[in-house]
Image (cartoon, rainbow, N blue to C red; front, top):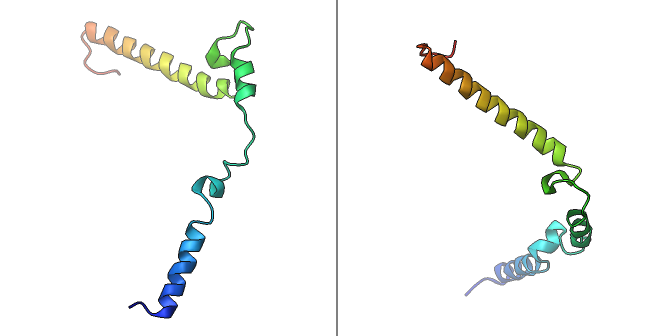
Length: 90
């Protein structure tokens, strides 16, 4: 048999554990619905590509393009050096 104090503690823990859902604890239940905003934004025919439409796009795409072009040019430089007989990049 469980001691009365342990039973009360278990009941209190269960009450705290199930009083709110995890979504309510993290603040997702009473959040505004942004779907109509993004639907209007992405279905707007303004001539922009889809990946450039948000205000955060330049922060993601400019570093990506820099790494992409840098990686290709570094690989091309290494291949040209390899065809000329140099085994290392420098």
